[in-house]
Length: 156
Image 1: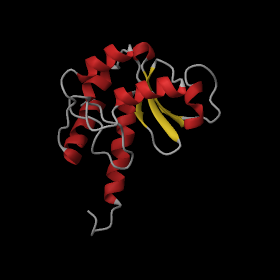
Image 2: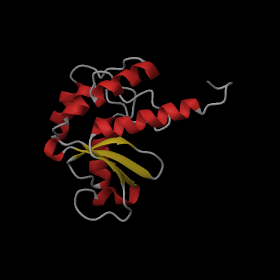
Image 3: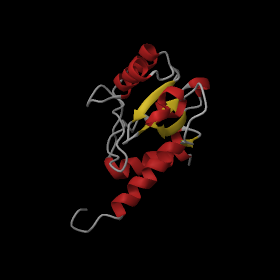
Image 4: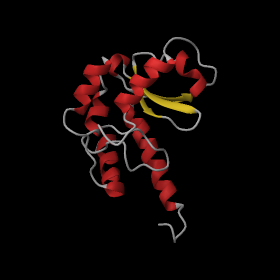
């Protein structure tokens, strides 16, 4: 079984299927001029960015706000985010993006002060990164499972 198939099983157990609305990914590619990684598109068949509470992601869909399309546009305009990146999340004082150049889908978690440097110069702080979106999802699911195991009995 492939890694993405195992992640699919784990997502289904945690939250059920949460597929991205038909057409949304095509709109993202069209409006942002990006080529989304194949594993990102495949994962969209069962994962829309919701249901991961240990590290909330932007919606991969039209709602709820914020979503990956609107946040990518906003950060391009306001912070000079390079055009090759798709904004996945904005944890406190940081940013998680997927590098869509070359179709690889590398995911980068950097400090917010480095947003304008992404893709153009060395970052001030070494980021966390995953070589593919699949590897990032594997990390997310593992963290979510551990967080749910660590819940006190009255919170589960």
